Image 1 (cartoon, rainbow, N blue to C red):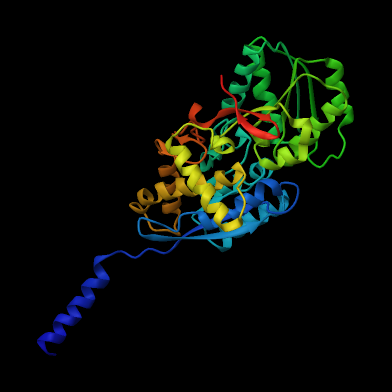
Image 2 (image 1 turned 90 degrees about the vertical axis):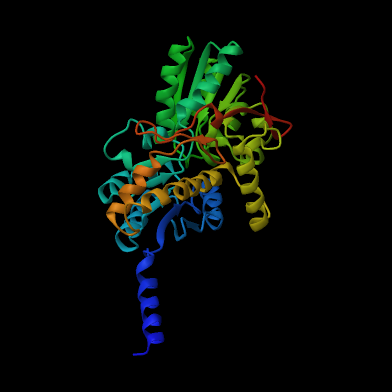
Length: 382
């Protein structure tokens, strides 16, 4: 062999040994792009093309699945992603009840799950199973405390509650009972309904007879509208509050005049043009612009929850790669640990500081008070 050939052979050997080669990072995304939760799931599914394509030089592949808002289909999709696709993480599902039903599978397989759902029950109270779940929406108590502060300032002494008969509404009822008691606000009625209900006149009449100063509706997506339109049609004149579950533009269109004057707390995405300049506003503005360029319409805030999940993974992946390669239990465990150490990460919804005790990680920078004025979202000062 000539000297030149030997050098060429040595160069080839060194090139194959000098840089470790990793498999693509695989992330499953489960959304409810059809069915009762579609108003939440569609912007989440549509946000997938905007997620980071690589991190630390490694490609990220996304595997999208639709569970049609069906918890049984969520379980099937979850198991497919874990058992067949061998994903390193899962973003989703869209619904609170759907998410509660798959936590056990995330824990058993050791797969980080980034849940863009409303209920804090997916991460609280923290357990051995829930330590695998991270939540990209504000916890109920953070949103609720802003609403209760407003109630106190405006003299609300009695409150009626109505929420969905699922983990979202149930956790809100639990949070509000404590906050109301701590702030000398009496809950005089507490009603529930199913998301698919087409009439809730009975519950509304009970609220009306209790004559509360204000009513809080705890329902996600389109299910937040019916209680308010029904209350208004039965003659309720008090202040109506909503949770961040109603933070989407179709709420305005579906509710019409009945939702005028509604007060809710949510992320700044609803009032970007009115929000102060912050890193979160810059990220949210870019996300909205990119979404509009793809779909010729603005995304609901729920889409931002999936986008933020992508930012969290993008930030955690470089640290996890130092421990193990994708496709392994060790990588998934290292990814979970890295997510749990997220510090001062700005996203579309606010700033994330995740700890072993708090897998949502938002503070007051993740919420603003908003009202409906002349059929539009309006930042509410004070």
